[in-house]
Image: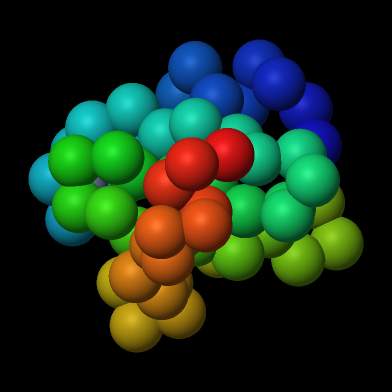
Amino acid sequence: MDHRLLDIIACPVCGGKLAFNKERQQLICNLDSLAYPVRDGIPVLLENEAHKLTQDEKAS
Ligand SMILES: [Zn+2]
C-alpha cells in the first residue's frame, strides 16, 4: 500500500490517524481499538468491515 495514503486517510469513526500493519494488511485505529482491512491494496474504511483488535494485535 502507498504509505502516502496514511497521511490523508482517517478513521471513519473518530477521525483519528490510522496505523498500517503491513504483516496483517490492516489499518489500526488505536483510539477505537479497531482494525480495518486492506484488500488488494485498497483500504476498506467501513465501520461494519472493521473488527475489534485482539490482545495479540494490540501487542504488535
Ligand atoms: Zn477511530
